[in-house]
Structure formats: C-alpha cells, structure tokens
Length: 278
Image (cartoon, rainbow, N blue to C red):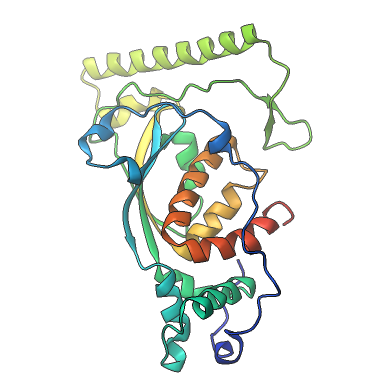
C-alpha cells in the first residue's frame, strides 16, 4: 500500500458518500474452501487452544490466533483523534473506514494488532519471513530435537512455462501422483534417518539438522498490525503466490474477517480487486 498520508482532511470527508459501494463483497472461492484439510498433530499438543482460534492448514500445519488488540473502533478513534473526536455512530464510523481504505490513509489501521502461532513447512516460512513488516520468533532446532513431521503434498504440480516462479496442475496420471509422493516420502525418511544417526554419534543438534529438507515443519510466532497484515494477505493470496502459502494467508484473512469485519469489507472491496492487476 502507499505510504500513509496525514488525516488533516478527514473532518471534511469522513461523512462523504462511498460512491454507492456494494453492501456485500463478492469474492472467488478460496483455496481453503477448495482443498480438504487434514488434522494437524505433533508438538503443538502442548499449547492450549480451542477450535475457534485455530485453523488447520495442509496435512500437519495450522494458524492459531494467540492474541488480538484493537479492532474496527481502534481504527476509527485513531483517525479522529486529530480533531478530538471519537465515534459518530456505526453508519458514519463504517463510512470513515471505507474512506480510509479507498484513499490509502494507512496509519489508523496500525492501531489494531494480531499475533499468530503458525506451524508450516520451512519453505513456506522462508517465503513468509520475506515480509519484514512483522515481528517473528521461530522454534530453534539447536535447542530441541526435530520430530519426523514433513509436508507431503496430495498432488504433484508441473512447472508453469510462462511464469518461472509458478506451477500448474500438469498432466500427471494417478500412478505418477502416487510415484511422486512415494519418492518425496522416501527422501524424507532417508534424511531423517541420517539425522537420527548423527545424533546417535553424539553430533550436536545444530550440526545434525543440516541434512534435513525444507519440507520439514517448523513453528513460529508472528505479530502484525492490521495494515501490515493486509499487505501480507494481498500479496500472498494473489494468483502468483505459491498454493501452500496462499492457504496460510487465507487462514490469517479469516481471522481478520472475524475480528475486524468493517475493515475487512473495505479491504476486500478496494485491495483484493487490485491484487491480480498490480
């Protein structure tokens, strides 16, 4: 998103019409809605959570909401503080959020904060950490022993011939899908066996881990303000994003939708529509 501008004009414009914006936001079916999700198991059993604050992703992963501060009204109050004002009623407050989103007044959205606990394959985490607009802390396999949890895709994908960083469904037969999955699983088993062998020899965890693949699961905490979260969601749900990280971005978007419905509606109207065209 563009760098935020000051709120000096808000007193004149926050009650303006939103150009007859639709009352409901239409969107295509997400990958999470299209893809069956298998249960996540493993080290996360030590964390207390409810089904309401955890969304399972891929075969063993998840996104869990750890903490949340602020909300739609925090955005409203931040936008109006310059004029010593707060709420003007739901209708005008929602129109203000719509105005802020439509005109790229970004700083008020920084007053709401989300904190997530994520379990994802390492290759997903490395893509995720490229978004330097958040705060991260990851499990260390120098301190704890790696468990044999690896991402095994349901289906193979072929290289996209037009987009070097993307993939397509490809023309794989069922036998080829099964053979490919078996090859991936065999590689995981061999790597994990070598890891255990090195540990058994007395090799330090920090060195033994170098034989492990990027399909191994890791866990981390990440905190975003709502403005940064919207940027992550917009980029990682776009058509050029890898399908695996798209599923995680859609999970964070679902928490965003639940906790900040006014902001999410404006975001979906003005930002999602731009994602594939920018």
